[in-house]
Image (cartoon, rainbow, N blue to C red; front, side, top):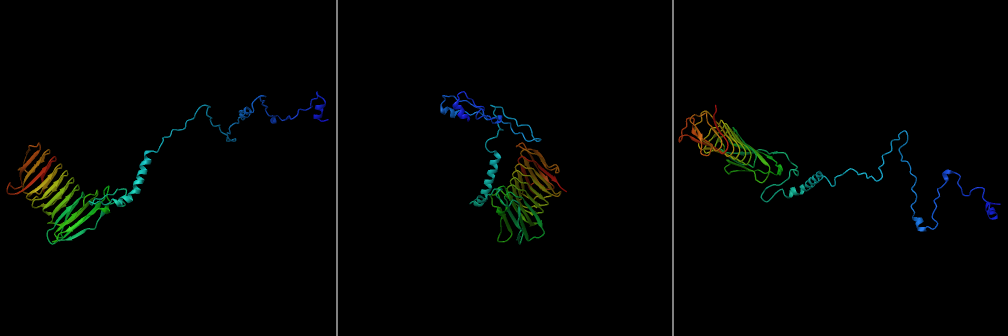
Length: 358
């Protein structure tokens, strides 16, 4: 008989071998009893037992290393702090890129204003170096008069043996808001051909340097806002004016009522003969005058807060003035007051030095 038949035939019969029993210990399953009267919903929602814990992989020998350190349960590992937002350099670079892209349109649209002034940013300019223009050559029939109204550049005048030619060469220097190609210089010549004019329209931040070659007997009228003025070898009447630049003259002979004026620059004359009515004035600069040994003129010199040195000329008397400075009067050479030329030197807060040359 089979086991089932024996079970029904004899109530005390027991099978000789347990049914549905797995002999392999690895195949045995853990039996978890369930409550008899438990709700079926509770049985389905019961939390399953956790899976068996497995060791973390630490590599294969012989390259196995120490297992990484595991955080302790309940302990929160905080990552490195990172500053929110973008840094200031990001916005600086971004602004520079935007301005550079906009420069092409704005530079051309606003390069000229109605008053003739110029606008351009240095980052937008394609030309940032100085431009040396070709010399302007003017033919004259007599002693020329050269008139230059600069805008802050230097003016240099030298003489030539050619009595019928005036040459003017300009160098155009771009400023922070200028392109050298945009700087203009206007030239003109009088109908008789003996007066030469050169001027720079204002409004730009650049400057123009002038180099002028003239006959020795030329008359000069030179004006610049902040550049230096230098002349050499001229024998004529001069009017030299600069705001914050220096004025230097060497081996010149001033005739007529020549004047030199500067606001805060120095004036230096070396081996220069001064004609009647020569006036030199500076507000906050020093006047250094060296005259040839055969010079003859009457000197009037004064300074409000500086000193006067005319020790090479015993006839010149130096004494304090009413403003708290120093004044000097007297004859230089064989001149006497009322008979020779009169030279007037004045400065507000600088010194005056008059010396005799060889």
